[in-house]
Image (tube, rainbow, N blue to C red):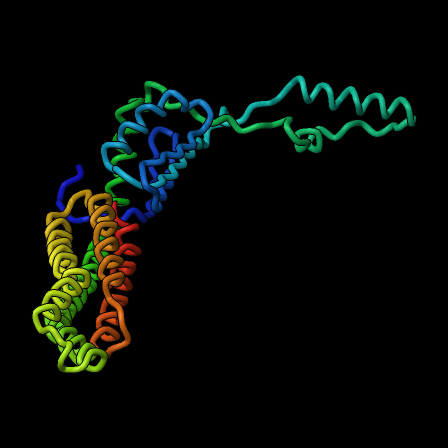
Length: 301
């Protein structure tokens, strides 16, 4: 019943009600973010034997998230309440003792006695054979899960659209960074040559040594590898997202790699020249977009 390949949000809520042969069920399903599948199941007294069935059905439909499932069962039959004879007898003995001690002539009020805590208690109906047992519970729960998943798919589409916008911005920033990186090496060489001439004068200037130093400095500050990986990771992110299904963990791992490349990129930028300041700004924007992607991905199954 998991049909479709759309990414799903881990957030959703659904309710379901059903009634059959005097037994009424009310089910509440709530799902929020969690790294793994964390089930919290609350069943009425007498339904404990259905817990394994409920867990199996939920696990077939939901892979990640904290799921709170609450099932209430009620019936309008008179057998839905029971009288605690022992407690009622205790109350009566206490009343008789008080009457004797204080010489009270008034008879005990039985209506008031029944209203005392614990004297009359509701009885939670159990899923007996007349309710088709497991079959009815399974059909009822699967109907509620279907409604929950429709909501999760709808929210997943909204999240996916937002992710695509941030990915487009990532591609633009990466292209901008590649352009700036391509301009950096010749500009660096020109500034280095000018500085050495200033310090050494034209007689002590060795153009060959300058070229070697410039090449070494370019290697230390070259961000080509990081930018290539960022571009590759961004394309891979888009492909995983379009593939749909359970994408949350894969995208989260990929974002960790993208963040690592962005940190290395920033560490290679130095100096207060206009080009480096612009490169730093772009690198910080890349980091910001990665964080926005991470916030959205945390909500995907």
